[in-house]
Amino acid sequence: MKGISTDRICSDLASCLKQNGIDFVARYYSRTTKNPSKRLTLEEATALNQAGIALIAVYEDGPTSKSYFSNDRGKSDGKSAYAYAQDINQPSQSAIYFAVDYDATSQDIQGPIKEYFQGVFDGLKDSSTSKSIYKIGVYGSGACCDYLRKNLDFVEFSWLAESTGWLNSKTYDKWNIKQSIATTTLCGLDKTAWDSNEAQGNYGQFTIIKANNPSSTTSTTPTIIQTGLASIDSSTIDKTTDFLKASTGTVKRLVLTQTGIITTVAASIGAFIKAEPNISGIIIITAILGLTWLISLYIYIEYLLDCKRIEAASDPTKHNVT
Image 1 (tube, rainbow, N blue to C red):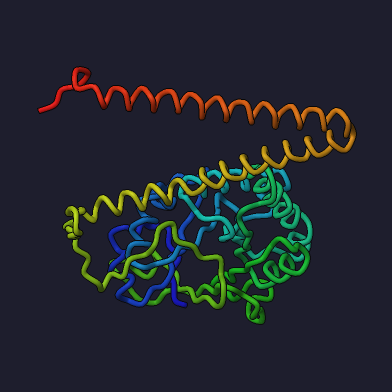
Image 2: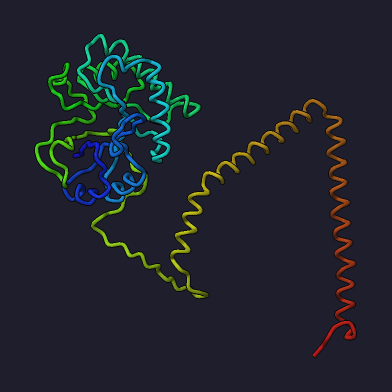
């Protein structure tokens, strides 16, 4: 798969990028950046997805030295990344990469950087109130990617940075994404504004909408469907479908709640019958007799009403006949 990473907004470039064979775009989540165009927006994510381009999310504030990394900073970044992903509607089980954007030593990687990623995991987990719903990836040198993938089982993806001179980067081949320096202009982005990337297998990509095929022509005019009784506007069907999709979660929760209540009541009744068989028998017999009496009363009332209806129907003075 072919992709790019950039700190420039790509909303207006989506069609051009797709025409140039770009399958995914890597964009940033950040809390402290002073460059507004670095941050991925919901509008940009939608535009890229509509063009058939997937997204990669990378969280980066300023991870360019050892001093940045600590367990507390990792927790803070994990929580910020979770909040950002929720705002973008990033789906669960896709990845957020966290950057180590310098040539870290082995001591740095095994010390504060490892602690940082443990904090990231805890921050994501705490934000989701249970198990983290986002997978974790690392962007960095070959040594950094290799160590974290091997020693932290929750780090599932690695993105090899373009700097081949960094520790063990030339020999690391277990990457999910590999970055390299751009050499040409692409869709108005000069070669300093983007980096080339290639991906293999599952690399944590995601879409927030169902991507459209940009080569197909889609009519926005509602279709009128003729039936034996009436004409139905297709937009009505679409709205109904959208409602049903949106309601799925609510219906599931309602069904589960009802099932839970019925199961609890049934279990309680069963336990009571087992504990007090004599009293239970009396209650059951009384309930059956009461139900039988109510049914008999209903039948008798219906009989009286039928008699009144027949009497009214047979007397022409009680209704208007023309």
